[in-house]
Image 1 (cartoon, rainbow, N blue to C red):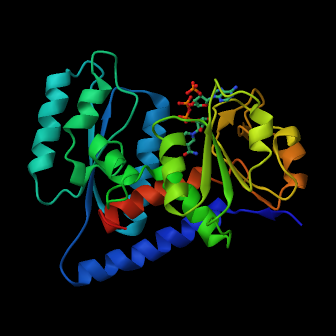
Image 2 (cartoon, protein in one colour; image 1 turned 45 degrees about the horizontal axis):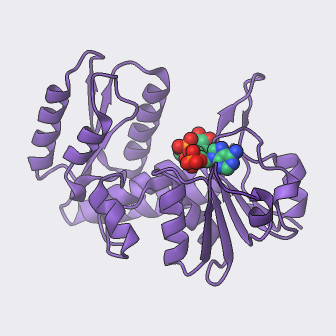
Length: 279
Ligand code: NAP
């Protein structure tokens, strides 16, 4: 029987645990505050920012929203971040990507103090993850680890294959699976004999950004498949990077899209805001 990994339920569990923790903090006179910066009017970004604010409200995290005009200069944004870095009442700073073209994204991400970088994108946090020191971890791959653990799926000693090597998903995913003592292989667009490698996986994490790319030929009988992809199809429905209907019957467990990895990203962002560095 295939286990459907329920990201909606698991993310709700995490948010409820955090809500309780924040209530305890408030009772002891401390609180958490997240600064969320959006530059311009990208409609998708506006939805993400709204959902982050809603999650903060639910958990009891104070959030400060900075909605800046499309023509904001790099220096103006850097100035705002410098101020937020210095404020003791702000625990987390999040800059919603993408940024308008006059602003250098790398420069902005580097300017956020690593101890407030709740997205886990700053090179200091990326470096800490790779050498096993405490630090913020990128939210989507951290969410995948929670999905596995809270579904009773053991990682230690397992053949783990990560399809995709982006900085925000594939690479930190590989580092986290390694930290959990998996045996990890990372595949990308230049990988030869892709199917042969993915068919070795006990745990296959797919993040290639191509709708329904991975079909049953890529998957070993009984594997666990985690689909990070998210795409809106012409009929307006969402699908992942995995062809769910053909792959699911071969798996022992699989995440659906929607309702799998998606809801975990915000839950882990909230986790980072509440717990700080050092899980
Ligand atoms: P990305 O930056 O586009 O990276 C895609 C990766 O897949 C690259 O490493 C690329 O290899 C590799 N790749 C592309 N085509 C391939 C092929 N035919 N065979 C093998 N490897 C291939 O994407 P991303 O940001 O990691 O995102 C991946 C997916 O996850 C997207 O669908 C995105 O929307 C989704 N996503 C979801 C969440 C969430 O919260 N659920 C969060 C982030 C991303 P090269 O490096 O060689 O180019």
